[in-house]
Image (tube, rainbow, N blue to C red; front, top):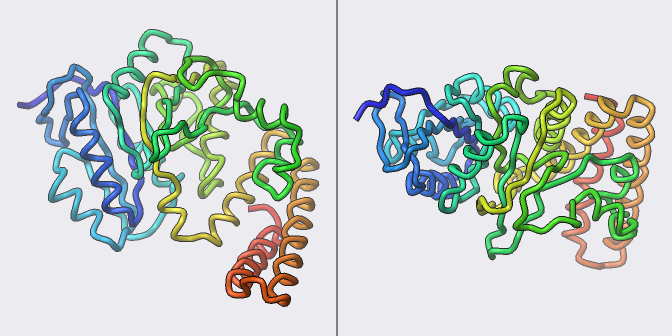
Amino acid sequence: MTDTQPNDLSIIIVSWNVRELLAACLRSIAAAPIRCVAPDGTATGDGDLRVETIVIDSASGDGSAALVRDEFPWARLLALDENVGFTRGNNLGLEMAQGRHLLLLNPDTVVHGDAFNRLAAYLDAHPEVGIAGPHVLNADGTTQSTRRRFPTVLTGIFESTWLQGYAPRRLLDRFYVADQPDDGTFEVDWVQGCALIARREVYTQIGGLDTGYVMYSEELDWCRRAKDAGWRVVYLGDAFITHYGGKSADQVQTHRHIYFQQSKLRYYRKFHGRGVALALRLFLLLSYIYQLGLEGLKALLGSRPAMRRARCATYVQVIRALAAGER
């Protein structure tokens, strides 16, 4: 039947060449205790939460767009003729969305039970909370760490670099919010963007994601701006979503390295100043140069030379990107 009431939730999925994972994600949405509202206003499902699903297909070559059209007609599809990236794709979805709450959801996720209802109900019950993230699981059912405190300058040096294993334990425990239980509900600084719900008022006030980030750190930036505007960010340990992790990014490994480091530098430049960003850039350059030399030496010594050469090629491109300056 046609549902003329306003939507409670808009789910935005940006997808690129992950057809089967996208199908599993959409099936889990359809199975949730919600009311799926199609573009023509017809609604299916037994739940009270009125949900529209928007799929932004970023020029996939694996038939993803046709899959959505044929098998999931209740989803609103925007099939692009170019790969616009994660951040721009989500902004297109945010512009299209009509719900009072907005959920950014990766295509390589599966939603469990009443996760949508719990997330939306929490925002409804806590008007001071602008953004929330669910309890994210790995494929094997273990908890995937997705709640965070804002990174310090020291965090930027140690986290996700070859020095991470040498970092003071308390530094990374603080960053990863290791002092809180996985099944708890508590305030954090930011939550990762594989599954992130925001109330519309946040989007209206601070705008969409910063497109200066192609991928990585865009949700950190968004949460930082929301917190600076006075909103709280919360982690909900009783709303469950499985995230298979990085399946689109896995297709472009070299660019993944480049985007990650460029995004890190952009964040520090915006929120810690150009001096800090420059120092971090120099550190990262020296770090990759060191890794390039080490991998090259191992290749010369005959230690898995094909793998070492591939790594060297990646590190050379990352060094060139970092040396080119800010994006």
